[in-house]
Length: 237
Image 1: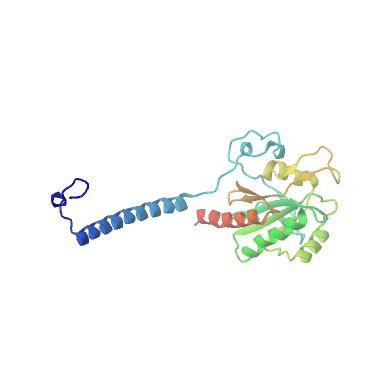
Image 2: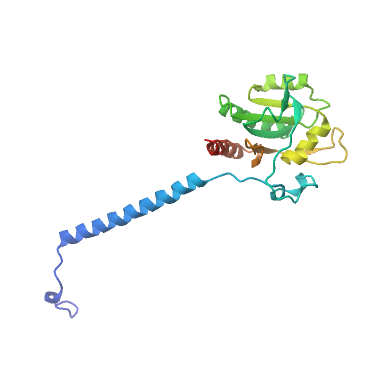
């Protein structure tokens, strides 16, 4: 007798059998949980896609007023520039390619050296991948001639098969920045100091749609960009 209960009245339970039962139940529930986790995580991995940006998704200060409120998937318009080798680079160059677009100038003392160093990581990661290109547009074409861009490329180990340094008319460069990639802020005075350019690096897909925007001065953002390029490549497999 214990606490007023007669032990003879308690049902007999075989300890070994009870242990086997509990172990079996735990195994079943564990297996169900594992299958559920695999299904959920596998589904996310399979279904995950990068967003397709519209002008309305972005900071209006960087978007041309004519398209600021557009909610249509944005497509970069046709363009034509000249690279560091004097070669014409246009929409046909990037046809069927994933590419990264950014803006800089060779004498920039601020963010550009860091941006260039980080962009080189992208070049090196995809140096043998013909599906990926980099387009860096100068915002100071009065100074950044083909000769200057070529010297800059030599100095920084930039490979022209992968990474194009682009110059052209200021009107065209500013036009594509405001209406194409939303990467520099408009200033009425387009003199040497009449622009504000950003550290933004833009990921563009094979249909010339914007799929990612990153801070090119932050190492972890470049890591994310590189990962997102691999994710985007899987959409076309």
